[in-house]
View 1: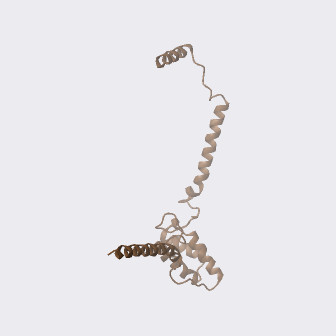
View 2: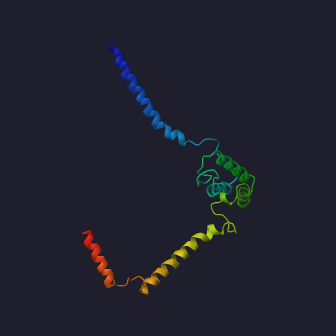
View 3: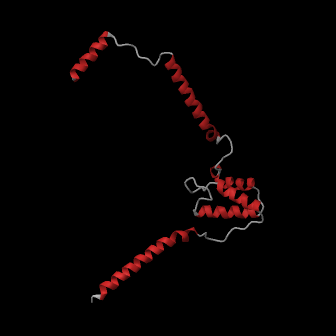
Length: 167
C-alpha cells in the first residue's frame, strides 16, 4: 500500500508535465494558417487584394479591417474580394461593389459627399472654433478684462467679518 502514493505522485507529475507541454505547443499551433493559400495570376493582383482587405472595414467588428477580422462575414468578404480580383475587376469596381452592399461605412476613407462632409470638415471646424475661442480670450485678457476691480471699503469690512467668524 505504500506504493500507491508514489504512483499517484508520479501520475500527477506526468499530468502536470503534459499540461505544460500542451500550453507551450498551443500558441504555435494557433498561428498555423487555416485553409488553402491564395494564388494569383500575378503580383499586381496579390498587391491589389492585400490593399483592399487592409483598407476595407469589417462591418460587424469594432473598427477592424477585413485583414484583421476573424468574423465569419469578414472571411466571406475576403473570399468575395479574392474572386473579384482573380476575375480581373479593378480596385474601384470592387470598392463600389462593397459600398453598394454595405454603404460608405465599409471604406476607411469615405468619399467627400454631402452626407460625409462633416466627417472630413469636422476636425478643421473644431480646430478653427478652438483657435477663435483662444484668440477671443487672449484679446479680452490683453484689454484688461481679465483683471478684477479693487474691493470697496464695505466689501473689505464684510470680508474681515467673515474671516473673524471663521477663525
